[in-house]
Amino acid sequence: MLLPGGFSANPRGIIMARKGSLEAERQAIAKERNALEAREAKLRESEQNAMAELLRKSALGKAPFERVEGFFAALGKLGLDEAEKRLAKS
Image (cartoon, rainbow, N blue to C red; front, side, top):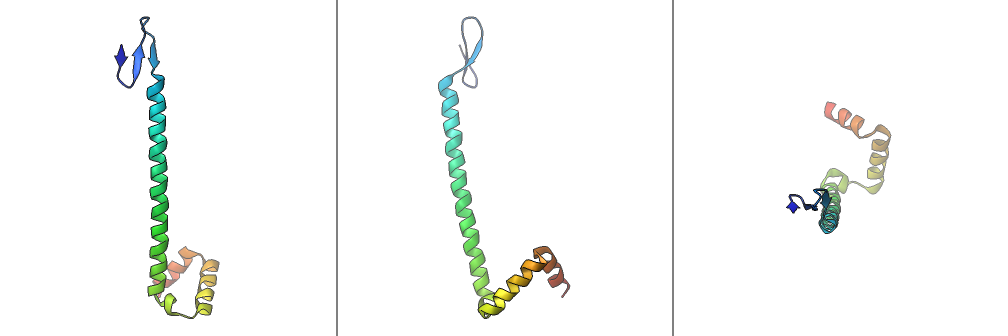
């Protein structure tokens, strides 16, 4: 007798999982996980490209390299949260 969820009951009434259905479910989950990881990697790449484009279009993209390098060094010392607070005040 086949029960919902891929389980069966033998003549004694003991419920047993169907081995094939469990393995198929594991494989389906692994396939979905791999697809999700690929989508996340593609999203990260798209975000990196968008950030690079924003930098190119911003004042930083037009500034001399030495000034941009100094700006990011200062930003690193302050931290992003503190830099945002100070810029919001100005």
